[in-house]
Image (tube, rainbow, N blue to C red):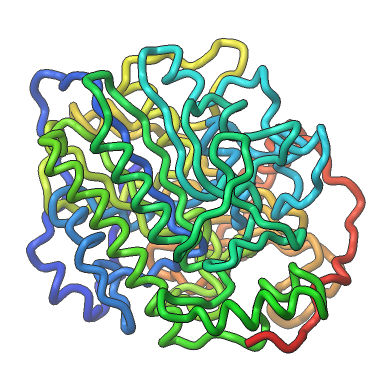
Length: 475
């Protein structure tokens, strides 16, 4: 399923991407199982990297992954919010198959909301297949004492369990410090993006001869809006936690700017560069597959053009993400691919590359792209499916059906009635030209596909309000 990369209209990105070539598999003998480094930015927008046309950020180190690998223009997150996407990555399955995946994002701390200990995961399968496994950074898939990265198959962990944390004080949304070494609370001094990058680089430097899977989950550029020099901002955010509650303080309603956001992205770029440098210093970059992406679309200060929607929405701005893959032993550099793919596909692909079979008891929803990536086979022909509490979506080929349960149709407006809009997202990434009326049979077919998918997921519980999220005073 290959689609046009652009509409044919002028795009300034065409000038600096002129050297990119359409993807072609190298073919030949299969390489040995690679080391795996999977790096996630947090709420990083589609256009927040230099290689995706950022107006505000320079990301020279991350951009080298495109120069030396593949840049995907139709990559999607499994969900429009962070914890469901992370659950999708680790399980390789739609997040709605688990109770924890129904919260968007996860916030309930009990024995039901997390990845069950007996559920096969990417780290547990790779560990059992002979890989060393480690995670540094944000977890957000359940809390202790019930859940943790260690319980999900990572042998080594340093980072935070919560969905948000102050970059300097390391305060979580419950008002308590949220740094852990394994499952033991620890205190560390430093800017969190730097701490995560340092630990990831140190792990690579000390790794032995066994293949390893390293998951690096930065919190940048997620709120609060604090760059490496913004200790004073952190002090205000942390102090405001007592006055209005930690979550509202960390949400940082009154804070941020394009400049502050740019500093956060720059720090992320430096951190990724540290990891890439260590792979080079060890002489293992050629035999390591590096994936870089985001957990969902951006918000507030993110650059999402030309898309509409943002984090939390199933419009393209909420789920179309920057995604880069580098694997020098198997893939030529400087390539561009418009093949649609989603986070769970990479779970399947990485297991396939490692020669590790998924668990028969928990079939993957993602599809391996390895035969396409290495041998040039036709990519998997399937529908991409999404579901949130208020929306649904199906992408098939160039078309995307967007379902709004409470109505978002253009005039004549029909509030509180479901709307079904159809777009060609290769020509209309802004999802403005609703062509549902021109293709009623396709709309009905995709609607039936989505309803069958929805019926196989767990039902959403009754909605609850979040009074703790009110504007306050931290800046």
